[in-house]
Amino acid sequence: MKSIKVSQPGGLDKLQVAEIADPGPPGAGQIRVRLHASSLNYHDYAVTIGAIPADDGRIPMSDGAGVVEAVGAGVTQFTAGDHVVSCFFPYWQDGEPTHGNFAYVPGDGLDGYAREVIVTPADWFTHAPKGWSHIEAATLPCAALTAWRALVVEGGIKAGDSVLILGTGGVAIFALQFAKAMGATAIVTSSSDAKLERARAMGADFTVNYKTDADWGDTVRRWTGKRGVDHVLEIGGPGTLAQSITAARVGGHISLIGILTGIKGEVPTLALMAKQIKLKGIIVGSRAHQRDMIRGLEATGIRPVIDKTFPLVGLADAFRYEEQAGHFGKICVEI
Image (cartoon, rainbow, N blue to C red; front, side):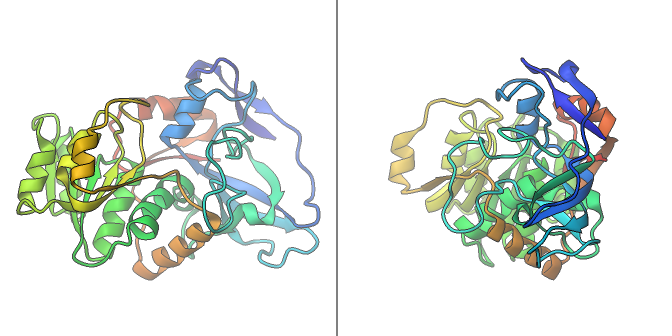
């Protein structure tokens, strides 16, 4: 069966279509899943270009959605024909985080979902939302769950709160949708006026172009009547954190999610301390979080925003498209 593998030291030109052996029938406690879709995340891109080193011949992609073809002995939560979606941290089932790195993440420390069939323990997957396509479901394991955990699990978002969302990628657009569904005020930043117009059409209450407004953090703070926002989805990293702190209210909550501007930098510790801000590092969530989120998606009717879909054999082209940073929402791969 077909798969995609990346060779060391990484690079999009190192992504190769490879034939791998069929995994066969599932054993006790396992399921066999015919994969139909995946979606791109910055983490996947970092693996494929070698920024996050992985074993030679690693099968990339942390998101997978498909159909259960068979179940092994003792499996009761799934039956053949069920539509399912993978878990980013398959060994983090519930409770507090169990990993401080990506060693047990498919597509990184483990082989991922850029393949046609996989056999795994049953609890590596959850049911997909009812009525969703496989491509829609494939957007959930990383991007959607990150936004859900930041706002709902860690942020405790409620009606009347205000949320600052950096960018218009996969995590950001899900955050916008969750914020509006929860009755919150949503503020979105981007370097593209066209993307900001689309965000307003989706319900964003205020938008800022950070390319034309260097002091966008203060602009956001002033828009809130100088109170500041309750929640910030900090997707940029060290290059944007100072502005996010400026935008946040005293006692506000910042979810540190992304590293788009680098992996280290200065932190305005005095401002962080003076505002008594809660700064929380976020890497996706647990299987229990995912199940809760899917119930929430079914209850609210939220559907993902998909920018473009590529075939599995065009995975390198999909990442090149991601490199251009012109997408709005998720980029997906059909298997």
